[in-house]
Image 1 (spheres, rainbow, N blue to C red):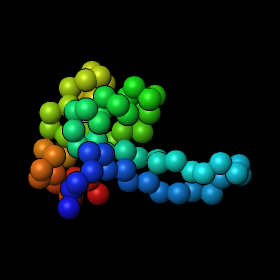
Image 2 (image 1 turned 30 degrees about the vertical axis):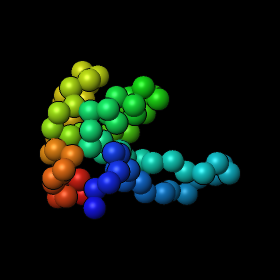
Image 3 (image 1 turned 180 degrees about the horizontal axis):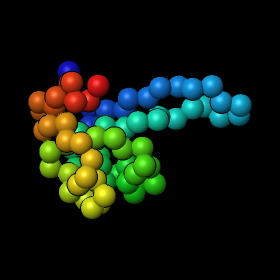
Image 4 (image 1 turned 180 degrees about the vertical axis):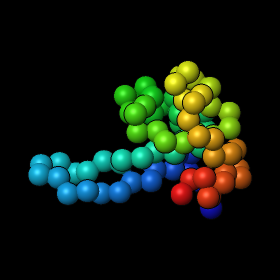
Length: 77
């Protein structure tokens, strides 16, 4: 059920450009996925992280959704 390392919750909104819309909110379920999303410059899209994510320091203040193998579905939603 949770085979992905990264769960992306995206809502599309109308845009005037022809570019494909990207994700608006990201929930990271592993520390490595949190670091990858931060490294690609999308730190502002992360709205929740797993219980073990500590880097970059900005994610420490984000809501925790639990560990990878048993995340809280309510917290993710």
